[in-house]
Image (tube, helix red, strand yellow):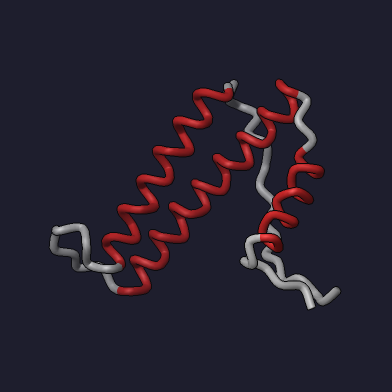
Length: 107
């Protein structure tokens, strides 16, 4: 099989919060909404005038995207710690699904 190109980031377990499945899922949706708003500004779709430069908007998109990623990682911790989920096995199944759907090719 060929090399799979990946993007590795390491995000912390937030140890000053007491997240639940429900609270973290809701937070994930909130952060995804903020990401969508930032992208809307990037594409001029927000309906509001903006004086932000492209770099400022890209920085905003990155900030919101990392908030989404942090919240997703927090949810992974909740699933592991509260529900004994095997994230590693789920990741392997996820990669296989991407291959089966032809989103990812290894050659």
